[in-house]
Length: 313
Image (cartoon, rainbow, N blue to C red):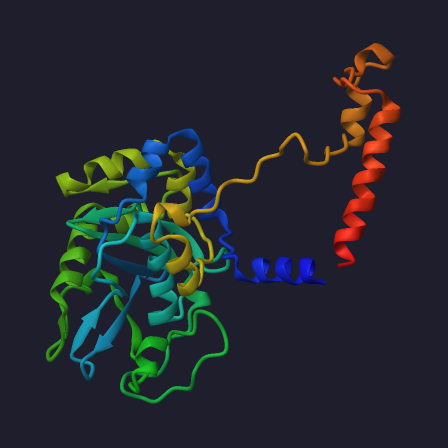
């Protein structure tokens, strides 16, 4: 019983890091440890998502009693790019209840690092988004995804329905009595100047870009890996905040990719693979051994008896 108690404790304590982003990072580490370390270097400090709909609207937050407009985003400390890729999706969920799955996402622009912020335009289906009553109306906590709502504002005791859509074409020119947060307005203008809101409607993979020379090595490294670029421009559900902190904040937190060892059980051939094998005994590779089959059987029986004895302690 002690044996199984220890096994359960070790299993419970282990951190599970799974998902497409983790798998891609594992592949990059196998191909080039140097590139992996470059990608996992903490250097991106902020994220901002600009979600535009196919009816010409842009999703924004109304903060400071409705007087300041903001994008969906946050963070101020430096973290690795993969963590901030995940954070970008989390901020859309937390500050807007916008979840970039195949049901809503139609496309995305190339990702940009402007100064030290990861910014990107996303193209969404207006028919899948429910816009609440105008601020400062009180609205209930939504039970479905993509009913615009800020869980962050709600936790702070503010109106959760401070998330709305404005006209994309004139989004940077705010109505009387309202103003943009400077960094968000500048990033919006940067995306417009780069044609991001037109590019997001096109198919195909777009390369990563930056205006910051200090980020050039990171951007060039990411552009070497189409799988990572594709993920940045595709629908996917991010890790939770807890998983993000445990799995993506440093290079050592990425689990090693599982590989088959010589002691691992062999995976049986599929039926198709069996049918393609030559039908003669010579095609079967001989097992390398220095002991007789009788000796192997005796050893296996002895090991089994020993194992049973241990488990009964």
